[in-house]
Image (cartoon, rainbow, N blue to C red; front, side):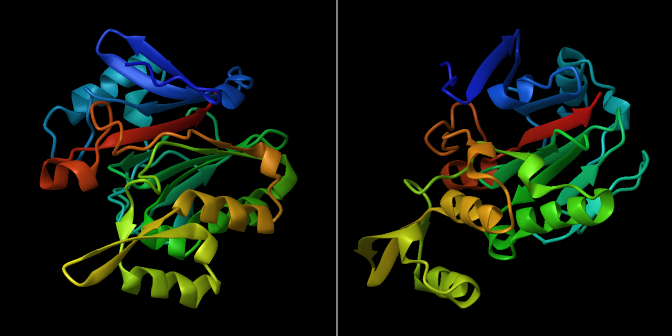
Length: 259
């Protein structure tokens, strides 16, 4: 299986496999990044996770002892990392930094991974945007923090949206739609009406398009947004998916670091 497409390359080095964005590879002298694939898995409960971090970091020439990560509680909290710390972040779902050699990590099983890179100010961000984070505009809050902390210009920021559950599999119900209506108003363009199951109307929601729209509203150029166009459920052979695997789902991870 090769997941390469117009925006993505699929790299294979033995049992280490990962995806990289072609756009970010243009700046490979300044930034390293990857979205991991199976067989390597990274949930906190996985005894092999520490060894797997070492494997993928070795392939990427990254020091696995310097990783910054969080327990991720589906918040809208983004943390600016000013120096390496071994602090165990809990209620944090995104990071930004302008410091070199500090790898920022987020983990996934269907939620949306978002890498931000200001190619002028040399600032990175790594954001975990589940549906709750998407509802709370966490990626936009990360951009605003980059502006506040580092005087970034949104027009200079590259946005890379990694594999996640896409509209084809993201089945939701009326209460979900109502939550998004309350926050965004008319959201009809983001969902399709599906079947009725056990008396309940189902819908299929497109979180990726919503994220793209509200990022462009705060000044990100649409031509600077790159979508992997990969569904984690469709590609469960290579990606963890809570929708497909339920409690058996482990985690893929997204990593980005300034060199």
